[in-house]
Image 1 (cartoon, rainbow, N blue to C red):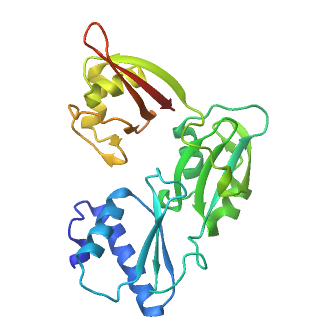
Image 2 (image 1 turned 90 degrees about the horizontal axis):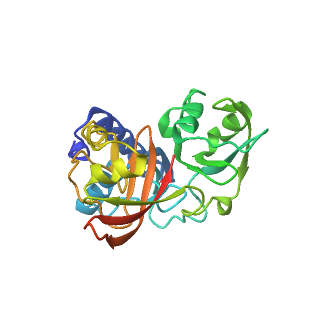
Image 3 (image 1 turned 45 degrees about the vertical axis):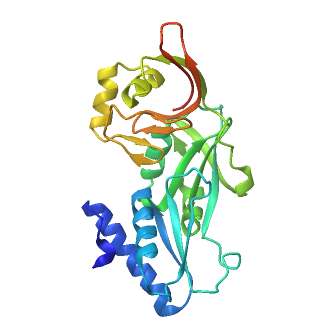
Length: 261
């Protein structure tokens, strides 16, 4: 099947096969059909297939993750001429708040709590910590379950409620502002500076395929980090290269980072 060309990993092939079934369902039933949350690799493959096809009767395809910078997106397939406004992507924004104190949860805390409910990872999107609460987009049909079942994050009792998308915190909300100097803008050097690790520790994280740059997997420690890059390190958090501040007197690169843990 040409649809599976380019899907190298078994998990990606399985996701692409499922997405193809949903595309076919849209064509057969002439109605909008929506996927679960899919990663950037699957999104790129879908775009490539749509761009390469000569089939003029393909449905329209729309990606929605709740926020422009998010990795995970739901794909909506729409019969030609159908309106996104009439059939928006069925996902909602949930706010997770500590009941007793203002908690400082890590990405791992939030992810573990949601997975602990028995939810598969593709049922909810990217996670974001705000100043007083955490936020996550979930599939609409699962929102009542999360609201009624999620009782704790880490050891903190929490309340969960659905909120308008407009309450989602901006990219600048939260995070820790850091000023660092590095010998070069190599990926392993930036990760080491941002998470207070040794260079060898950072290199091992990259080589173990635990790192993404601008939402794409990266396994080259010597990759040069571009301006405004978003670096995600599984188990540690996320870094945003907020500004390159030039060179120091010792010819080291000065940079401003924002760290989200």
